Image (tube, rainbow, N blue to C red; front, side, top):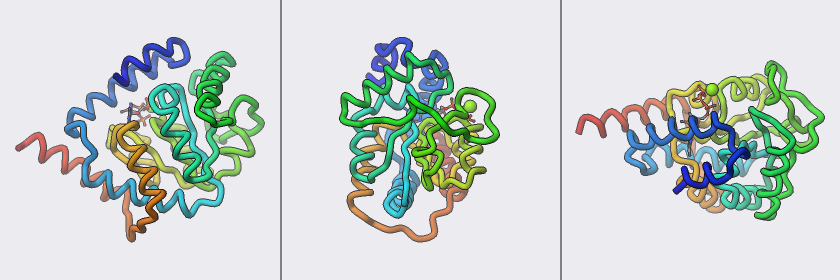
Amino acid sequence: MARKRLVELGDLVAKEGLIAHGRGEAFDYLLGEATCPPALEAIKAAAQTIREAKAPVISVNGNVVALAAEEIADLSKMSDAKVEINLFHRTSERVSGLFEIMKGVGIEALGEEVDDTIPGLSSERAKCCSEGIGSADVVIVPLEDGDRCQALVDMGKTVITIDLNPLSRTSQTAHITIVDELTRCLPLLIDAVRGGVDVDGFNNKENLKEVLGFISDRIKN
Ligand code: ATP
Ligand code: MG
């Protein structure tokens, strides 16, 4: 179903995005296509960080908009987070097409006009908005690339990611990694932001080890 939606959007989703989706699906089989207990802990930690943020921004790419525009809109409204479109393969057609999809779910996204730069990135992905990612304290980057995740951490941002691959550079670099499928995780994250449960002592490295332990137990048993 999700795969169909990505293909339907044609050129708005980069070919690399389709390949990335396949990587995600492979990891989802290892997880049993369900939200694992460590991911539930990461969701609580992410929700707390989002609630406490002064200027949170959700950074979205073609895959995220294709799969979860409505859920991103709900999270944005629930948490007062801006949404910024940031593309690895940036063309004005793709940016404006994705902008229109977000508009259709009630979100005026940033990212059409860019006036700021993420240091340390050479490609088009370095472009960002000063009123969005440029001045954010917390950045939520689902399905992110490792280089950009590292560059955001280097800028001093608190970075939350959603990534089915617990071993990706993004998962290993972010402050909070939710190892879960995007569309399955977002309603849980929205509920957790609404619910206001606090966690103490979240450790991302330990959480990722628990995810790997969960996968290996599933495979053995
Ligand atoms: P990295 O650069 O972080 O080492 P990568 O090159 O595989 O890893 P990208 O292609 O930039 O990363 O990002 C895609 C990531 O998103 C992959 O780790 C993939 O497993 C994950 N992913 C793809 N589809 C989904 C989805 N629907 N839900 C959650 N994660 C997903
Ligand atoms: Mg990558």
